[in-house]
Image (cartoon, rainbow, N blue to C red; front, side, top):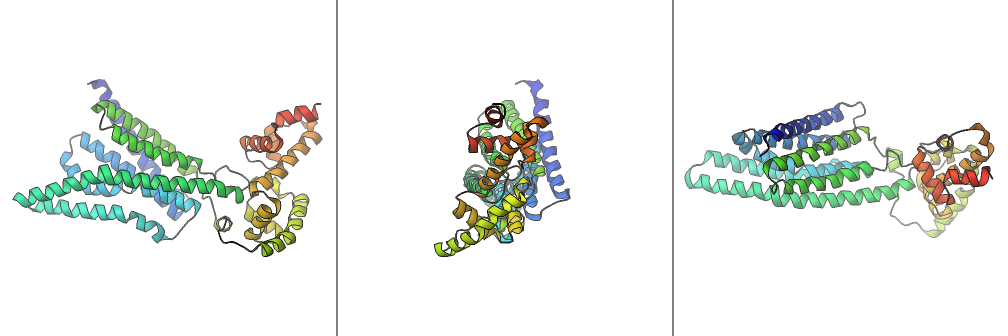
Length: 372
């Protein structure tokens, strides 16, 4: 055993605990605390912090205290996966308190059930004590190895489906992807799968190697998720949430009448007012410009023009870039500055949209058109 590596594992564990509590407290105290989504991610960090603390105490000889805390561990560990799912669910769909509360019934039942068994174990003697001891052992082992794994995989799959659905929906609501695509949440979700794998791996590796792998990667995971969660704004306000695609069918006759009514007004307004120059433009904002609601506007763009909202807006932005490249070629603006002037929020979004719509990068277009 490498004695010199023991302090490092302890340091990693303590730092992981401190960061978990730091992010949990900061989520609670930040000025724009949103009750449900921030509460779920805060719960996630508190649970991670408790788990790290539990194993740190156990490694430092507090076995008796940890044994008496096992019911809490049973409940806490079952809160992790539902917390991730509930955070993502509220960001992309929202829902009532009961929608989420029932997903935390299992942790509550496990906490109360194993707690009652532990109390009976401590109060009993002889054969009864032995029987309650076996029940408590099987309950805890079954939870930590079987139930936790099955529950986690279930919520990881559900969370992945929500993120996939969301990333298709944002093209109908936003004219940008920055801060709303929740790509980091995909890392959080599948990073939790890695956490499960490490948990299993830690039982097969030698003591110090196990702690090094588990504590090191856990620390990196906590820091990444915490930083991203603190930066993440609420994806949908009430107006944007009402813009999400609906499943209810509408008669083709009604749709055609609406499209005819709004299509010409929309195209004229785009040329006249150039709302696409606003890098934060959303479908609800454009609907206000047009004097209609998001449902009619989305039908006009999707069915009448055959495009998603972001494709429709980016088409105008790309044309604006072409105009700027020709008319302001002598102003020596950078490509990024031209993209920003045309309404693109980032250089990567600008390059991606331009390439998709023209088959060329902005620089290639400039060389072929402006410098020819």
